[in-house]
Length: 270
Ligand code: NAP
Image (cartoon, rainbow, N blue to C red):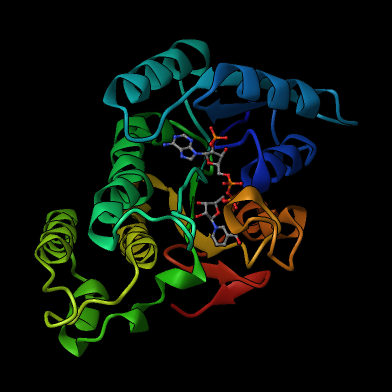
């Protein structure tokens, strides 16, 4: 039995990650974690009916909702007692034309892309620790590059090899507070809530990679590339199927590295 979980798998890149895992011949069960039952069930059925697909099922999952995280983990524990591969794909971005002020976009973006993803991962980690050749892949973005931070000191703090989860969460809170009071630029932060949420996820990937090595779990992250999905209003030049390969690679390759950032179908630099 080999179990993979993919969040936000009802459309876009996540759908193709789930499809590629389900048809890879490497899994017995792929669980698509989606927030909407109708969309999630339809995606699971479509993937399950693809040639050579393993068992594919839908399980309700809203990233950032503690009750949903808990019932998802409880159900996976009951049914499978472990997770071998977790792909944290669910993510959100405000459209460029969205009239919501920058400071009001900050918390909702961070709550899903960083805090919700991190909290959910911590909650499901006990099951991943029971996995065989277990892996976590976080779908981040090139937008999460370290150089977006204007302050070198901040760049050093986020990339410190001894960074702790607590220190990282505190810095994320600080970013949010500075954005709220309009002092983000003078404090050396970048100019993107989305980019910062992905930067924090990349930093967390490296902390998990270090801490979970003892449990035999590899933890990597990726940028799928600029893809043709709803998130980009279909302006992206890469197909979501090709973009998905950047997550599927560390999820399925022999002897994966850990703590790395994959982009353009290989290990890249942050
Ligand atoms: P998308 O088409 O907008 O799909 C996003 C998926 O995430 C949907 O299934 C959505 O569910 C789900 N989702 C959003 N918020 C959620 C939440 N709170 N709980 C559970 N599910 C949630 O976007 P995409 O382009 O495929 O993006 C997938 C990932 O790739 C994201 O993490 C994104 O940041 C990253 N990425 C994308 C690009 C790109 O060019 N497209 C580039 C770099 C990185 P609903 O259908 O219910 O909304």
